[in-house]
Length: 129
Length: 129
DNA sequence: CCGCATCCGACCCGATACTG
DNA sequence: CAGTATCGGGTCGGATGCGG
Image 1 (cartoon, rainbow over the protein chains, first blue to last red):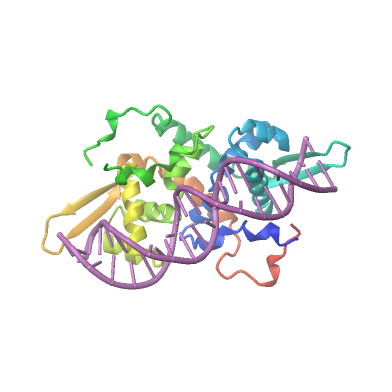
Image 2 (image 1 turned 180 degrees about the vertical axis):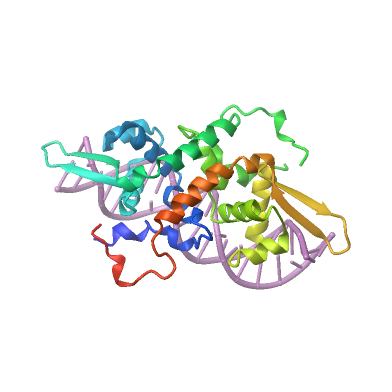
């Protein structure tokens, strides 16, 4: 069963990435990666159920799979505590932490430029193209 | 209804994006967006056929569709020159240019941390998970 | 030269149910 | 608590061919 780890985690192979951008984006590019990374960056260390609670719309399946990919890419470290109620904690690796400036840049730009996503205004859409 | 233009361009609606990251990533997130943006940022202004040549593996369909999405997101400006052999040029908008620091951060991290993607050694694949 | 339409496969992602 | 298994839909992206 050990093939499961590397199969879906390496979509970066599809991206030749003229520059390194494609590579970096392939690591954080999914729907959930950025969110997970962000939580881990802020909180430092979180267990599975905490992540699940913090990211309301994510399913167990998705959380696990994304976590596994991040782990395979060595961005996140998984720690299993051998206790009676199992406890597993996730935290950023050094490599993951090295992403912090990049993630901040992205977050910063996004915060500054996103228009109303949820309650978007109806009439503001027609730019002069 | 004319929703064709903005339908696929706005997958950011799916991403509630706890932080702005999800929004930003949704704009540059596809397989080709980053590459296209990068070319435009470096070269300043490029016509369709030039982009096509610069990005070897992209198909016309993909190039056009990605360009259209970038245009809809107001990251790229499209200029049609009414000439006998049609000429269309693409360039970054101000909004697009505002991405430059962010794109640089991403590219920088990617360049620094990517391992051999293209000519990756065959035996080195099975890391210790 | 620039662009669009259609078909189609691959992958992403969600829901549900089950296990150690 | 922390996963795994299976099913299935939706979207992304590639090939080909046609239109302005």
